[in-house]
Length: 240
Image 1 (cartoon, rainbow, N blue to C red):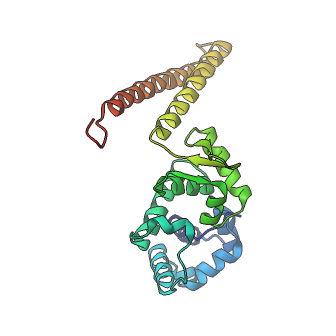
Image 2: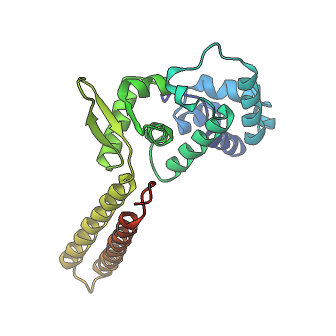
């Protein structure tokens, strides 16, 4: 089961599940959360008939604010001077957006950590400490992000462990990976159309799919190159 606190999106999905008449067990399965987490969340915030995502999220934030931490976690030390509540809200919103793009929850949380860390770099151990989850969960998320080329791996100088880096080219690499996937799908669809016969309904359908993904792939490559040229031509902070 994924670790960490419930997000606003989680609470929206809980409210939707209750409105659909789902049981706590069904909602827990939908969110991939322990049943105890769901039952405790609902009972604390109005019960099945009175649960509202906005009110539950606000009440939880207020309870967390009233609990005074005895120390600042080391992984958050760099956020010193920033509003903790604003940072937490930013993290949750960023994670929710990444989930809506199709990333699994834990993968989205790892990507959010890297983006919102000033260094843009963390080790697996730091991510485990920051997110309070198992090393296996971090390893799986890192693998998914590397596969999509959204992060890169660096070996820390004079150390045995790797660091995972998010940089200015991350989305460019991810975009290019998506473009290559579209090109592969276009090739497959065209080959399928030839096998089925372009005049058959199924063949014509695949032919249309191939043309669509070929067009989208070209447009993605063109947009990426335009961005690359504009990025390279952009002045550096020292004006050069």
